[in-house]
Every structure is written in C-alpha cells, then in structure tokens.
Length: 395
Image (cartoon, rainbow, N blue to C red; front, side):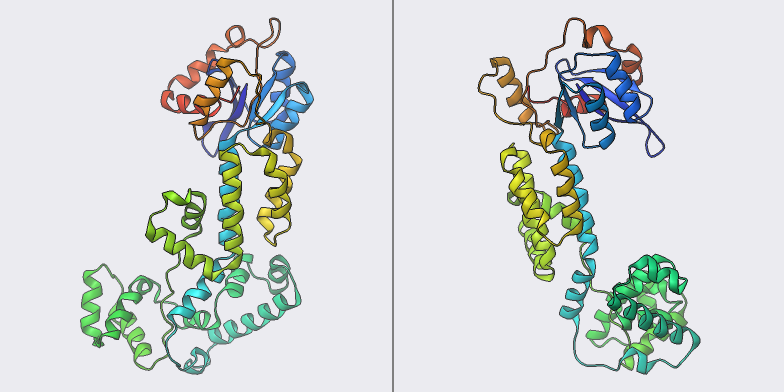
C-alpha cells in the first residue's frame, strides 16, 4: 500500500490518499493527514504487509502503531525532493558568500567611501548606529532573534544589516527614492564605462526601456557617478533554486555553461562545494538503490559543518530501516523482477523489494476500495496516473 498526502485545495486543506501498489488503484482518500486517522484505518483493515510512504513522522507513527508487522519503505521521489529542499536552504544560507565573491570580482580601483561622501543626516546616523550595534552583537554571538528583541527591530532587518555591506546600506539611505532605478543601474554603468555621461540622453534611453521615474532621480544618480561615490550595482549571482538544480541534476545532463557557473559557485563558497559532493553522493545512492552505503553517507554528513544537512542526516538515521528497504532479493519470483525493472524507470519509484500479498480476511484492494475515492480522483486523471506510478514500489 502507498500512502501520501492529497490536496483537496492546495495550501489550504490536505488529506491522505491510500493506493494499492499491485493494482495501481486508489483505495481511499482520508479526510486529513494525521497519524490518528491513518492508524484508525489500518486498525480497521488488517493485513497490510508493505507500506510505501513519505518521510512524514505522522505516517511513520501510524504504521508503527496500527500495522507493526508491515515493512515500511521510503519513497525515493520524496527522499530526493526533501533533500533538494535541504540543498536549496543551504545555498540560501551561504548566499552572502556568493555576493562577496561577486563584489570582489567586480571591484575596480579606489574610490571615496560612501560615509565620507554623505552629509550627516538622521537617516545616515541611524544606519551607522544600527550597523555598529548589530556587528558588535553578532561578534559576541547573539542570535538574530535576541538582537532583534534588544534593538526593537524585525529579524529580517537585522539579517539585512548582518549580510549587507556597509557601503550598500549607506547608499540605500541616500537613495531611498531611487528604487525604480535599481534595475537600470547595470545599463547606466555600462554607458558610463564607454564615456556616455549626459544625463538627458541617458534619461531618454532608460525611458524607452521602461523607466517610469522622474529626471531628478536619474540626475542624482548621475551626480554620484561623476564624483565617484556611487555604489556599484549588485553583481548578479544565481538564485539558490538555480544552484540546487545544477547540483541535483546528473552531471552528464548539465550543459557546459551551467557546469562553468557551478564551478564559479564552488570557488566562491567551500561549504557549497561540500554540499554538492554530499548531494551527488546521496542522489547516486538513492537512484541506484545502494542503501547498504547510506550509513557511511550519514556519518560523513553529520561530520560536516552544514546545519541543514546534518539535521536531514539525523532524520534519516531515525528512519534508516524504511530508507534502506531496498536490499536485493534473489529469491523473488519472476513477476517481481519484472515489476522491479519497470519501477526502476520511474523517477518516483519506491526503495522497496519485498513481496506484498493481500490476506483473505485482511486488506483487499478489490473488496475495500472506496468508490468515493475514485469519484474524487476522477477529475484528476493525469495526476492520478502519475501518482499511481510514483507509488509503484519494487515488489
């Protein structure tokens, strides 16, 4: 049996869908995704021998309580999806490293500091004070939430001061009304580099590109460019989700341009290099069903200074039996080996290799199938077929 969440209305209300793995037919859609509801259904329908599920603790708890004899199997698609989210979170945590690397590559020549160029105003004084206080508290070791509480700021504001360079903070204090100009600054800087510095001409050019601000906004920025106090436009860096895609895809499927971009990211941040190595090793274990090597991978992951990945590895250790339920079964019947070959071609195949048969008096997909489940799912034919394939476990 396969168990997964089912969205009645995405982001609002979820249930649990149970699918018979052998017949690939929906059995029932439960009204919620709590462990009590699933455990109650399993109590009423004994005889389930294999449960293919996601790593949600509610489902694991329900199976252990109501069907302790069943073999639990972690779905490979959910494992890779969960780990992709962990990789994305790690890339987001190390985004400041990429920003600093891009800024170093972009920096050109000495210039007057932003603080020296700005007249003392209340806004500038406030930015300077906040920057000094937040830097001091970060050096002491205060967490973001405590800094925010002491200074009466939002945690996002504290994070911005921690992760943004001082010159950029001061520039934002000076150019508070220049936000509409930000996306045109790379173009303006390129024009300045080739000697085009007339404000009226630049204003007309960016108006044709979609700028809707006033001329005074541009003229203030042009003035800072002429006196050398303008902060360079932020260097473009790839989004965490983009980096995650480069890391999680098989390396042979990456085009040369993306391979080069990933190498630049690795040079910028050693922690992302470690993340990439762990991610590719984990994906290889899952895709090729090398569960016997997972223990060593968990030990390596727990030894790295990567908080999100360490947490994921610890969770895997707690659910190790379900994750590694893919040992080869040389005595499996021919129909089982055929099913295995078919499920291996599916991205959502489960890591299972245990025969599942319905008992005469217990769970029976044909006798216990709830017609309302098929009615509810009838309007989602394509989605249902995809879901049934994702639950087609290795028998």
